[in-house]
Length: 383
Image 1 (cartoon, rainbow, N blue to C red):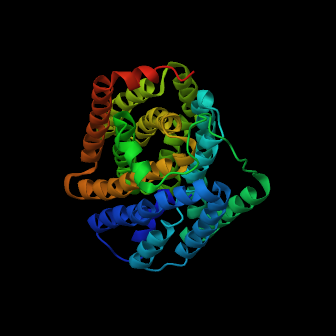
Image 2 (cartoon, rainbow, N blue to C red):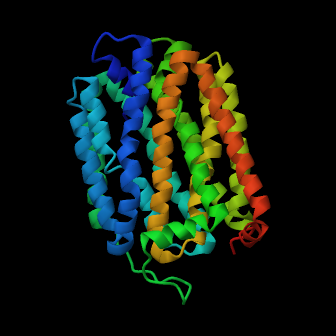
Image 3 (cartoon, one colour):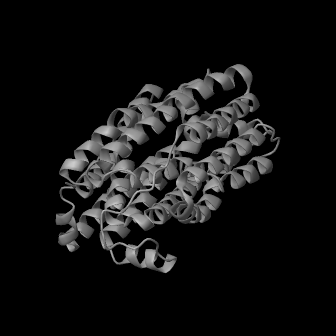
């Protein structure tokens, strides 16, 4: 609800230059993921020991308080530090992925995680448009406060609507707990797993590089009329593509193999991202965003399902926590990179660089598979 107008909110704090707003949009957007990067593995490890439902509740309450206070900010620095504080609790969706992944049979993990992705993306689809309308109608502060109410509601739904069951690992010889050193050793001893986690970094950099400045790009293409609303449409287009394809990609990957689909989607995302540099109208950008969402939307459930296969049950939360931490690092680098590139080289440079990152990730993933054929063969089919 608030992402489309972060840059516009910053601009409302004073009479700033366009370059200043672009760069601070990147920093304010990305700083949340500094603390999220540090806390994700911690929450994952705590979730493995004490249950993930409790972590979901803590996360929702913390997020709600943070977003509410952002609506009261009156300077860039206040917004910056509130976004930094918010990062401690940012991880509701990744933790829900860990909860469902650990309670789902391996052979249907992709399909189920794709369904979860469909739910979260439905919010991503509705949120920007709703936020844009509310911002144009009631102002930015009221929209932040309205958003906080929806997050608090999520906490109540978890408290009263979710039961977490204790699941035993399918492997009879598996341990009940692992030290942090053992978890890290497991990751580094599985090259394909490690590469999947590293690819998460570059996918997030690519995906988030344009987001904090997207409304400014929309303004350049469309003009100032109903800017928040049209920015919301541009954001939501990626959500719509994600919504339509996430569950389908997960189901296909359950049958064909997670790594094969992951490589295909990386190349697909790299190809469809590039034309964004050449668009001349808002509707061309919307189409590009839709195609990007259709490709990147499948990457998230596929990589989570693969981790579900590769990690023993007792360490899955922590491994997924490290993967989330790496993703948050990408979320942190991406907006800052996008802000700097657009500020110095123009909007088109962001599309060139991110397209290259996605294609390079696909190449790296493919080469890793070739060097580890046994792992690739073992996961060619998940059943």
